[in-house]
Image (cartoon, rainbow, N blue to C red):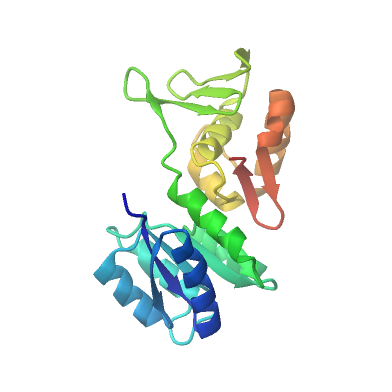
Amino acid sequence: MGKAQILVVDDEEDILELVRFHLEREGYRVTCAETGEKALERVRSSRPALVVLDLMLPGIDGLEVARLLKADESLRELPIVMLTAKGEEADVVTGLELGADDYVTKPFSPRVLVARVKAILRRGARKEPEPGGQAVIRRHNLVIHPGRREVLVDEQPVTLTYTEFSILAYLARRPGWVFTRSQIVDAVRGDDYPVTDRSVDVQIVGLRRKLGPAGAFVETVRGVGYRFKE
């Protein structure tokens, strides 16, 4: 089976060619765009499996491209890997909040970028249906039963609060994906269990403590948020 098509968006020709070379060497089909406007056209015409998107673009910048893609219901699930300069931490947070899946800072290692792309494209994590349509999440030595709200570590039950369980399940469904505190708040917020940005950190501390050594699978991404280790 042929590998996926990837759209690479950057206004620097040497970066486009560098990324194209390394992705094509892995068997991916690659198309390129130099502006945000061309990126939107090519996404709609060729429907790539993933977009590598520079944030600093002439005309429509990368954040606006991401915003427009995520606002389109037919394109909302399209994975985006952002390319950013090291000083653009605020833009990284904004991009992740818009729904981008990962980011790579410039200057970057092509091998790292290719590894991130591969990881995102294989993230159709295997799920085992439970009665009632819920799915068992199996990660490392953890088993998470959403329907029963039960967590097992090395087959031993771990007692979590409602919020701790919700955060763990949310992160574990997409291992390797980075989520901002705001995204986590939105995912687990409920009338009976209010969560604020700051309290997410407190919940993570409690969650890690209860999981013991398995708590190391919940990783902090400095300045951004959290992810579950692949």
